[in-house]
Image (cartoon, rainbow, N blue to C red; front, side, top):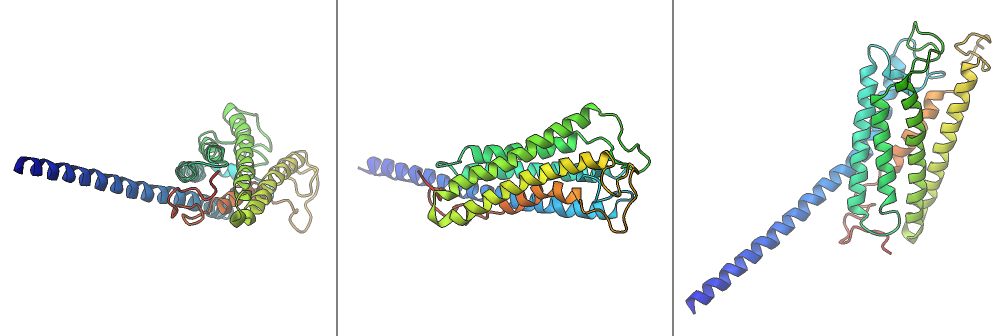
Length: 267
């Protein structure tokens, strides 16, 4: 009898230890997920702040003519390169955290994947810097030859902003399936449209600026007016990042981390 009682106590102790280990693992996963989600909210906002400060203090840089990517050039270019990479890593971590939360249901796979592509695209933008253009950095030609890394940077921009826009539409589909989240569905759709329109507008204005059609163009083909031309391309190129910062600013309550299944919109 004593031997049987001892065996039963041993089994209970082992079972209790296993349950405690599982509880600790769940708590650790919850903390990691919250940190990943927080990184996705902080990263894009930090990116915008650094970019605006760099653009305002960098000699020869014009927010009315030059893309934010141009800040990756020159002696201080490492700051913007690091800005791209850090934001990309945090956004990639956010995509992983989002997948840990959205285990099932609409957009549980493609939403995180598309945001992950967006994060990787930011990292690629930091590794493969753009080419000098429109007289920046100072002392360079208005429009120099296209290099391999500059071509990769340009193609990557289409993929990066495209994935962000599509992610907004994909997440809108998930939100639309829950009456409590319908407002976020409309917000996500509007954000996706703004990202697309901003990218197209920036591309068109860039072409017009390089051809000297717009007033105040660095090509010098038309005289500059008294006021700066109303085509702040940096702000347009930032629109996707800024909208992404707001869109990804979903804290653990919105994402349903407090629910047992981690799925605010199960199917």
